Amino acid sequence: MCGAPERIEERRERFPLRRRRPSRKQIIVRAEREAGRLPLGAGALAGVNFDTDRGALAQELGFATVAPNSIDAVSGRDFILDYLSAAATCATHLSRLGAELVLWSSAEFGFCELPDAWSSGSSIMPQKKNPDAAELLRAKAPRVVGHLAAFHGVLHGLPLTYNKDLQEDKEHIFDAVDTLELSLAAATGMIAGVVFRRERMREAASDELIAATDVADLLVRLGVPFREAHGVVAGLVRTSLESDTPLSELTLEQLSAHSELLAAHAGELHELLAEGSLLESKVSEGGTATARVAEQLALARAVLDESASG
Image 1 (cartoon, helix red, strand yellow):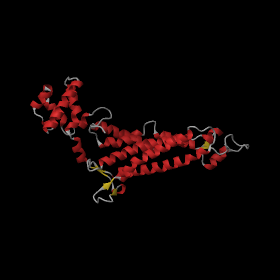
Image 2: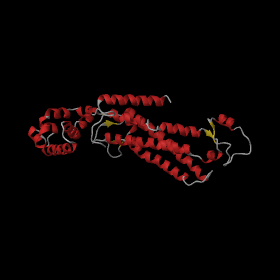
Image 3: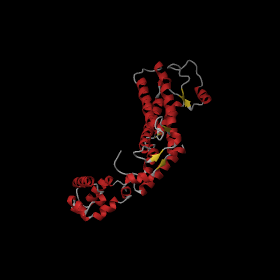
């Protein structure tokens, strides 16, 4: 977890945008294409002694085409590895979402409240609401990753073509599919019903110590090398903590003790520490400034629309 404030919209954007990377969807589509090749007629490894119309069989049975090589048709399981790889990556991202929801919904953070349908009560503490589904999202990811690793282990030393070891593919693929579908359903239900406590989040983001790097950047803009600005701000933070005084309420004398230049630009310092300024100051592409978040939301919607259209 980083120490800079960010908008909740950025967290929500993260998940559809992740899907743009050598898209997990593309991998699953490739796996589906490979699984759509009919192996029937390949025999145990070399084909059969009858010139059967495998194309007609494929059409009758709902396959897209036939597997062109009998050895690969019998021994190839790349489509399972592809699916398990995409599923493991997806489950890992879901686990990180679950981990954040567990933290955010805790009494210590108080950033959100999860829907009752995806939570449970405590067997001992009547007042407690447990984020069960979010916790299980964390636990399901290594299960799916384990299926990927285990099936790689099955395949890695096998000679061509068919070996009885390959019957293990069913256990790994079937459980991975069921686990991922359940995880996606849980994540969808939680996100649809979660209520964010924006005032509490705004309060947490207003901690002025979070702005330490921004204060250092202010000094850099005033001509101070960052290595020196870093030390100046560290001293200011120490003074703030020891005197139990917010950075914005340090006196000119206290500021001058660390940097006369900063004391001379106290007005700019106070503007920087004003509520909301930290979020709006991150103007680089992908940052937390309102205009940049709007760009990311538009991109996230486009990615989802593209996915929905196939």
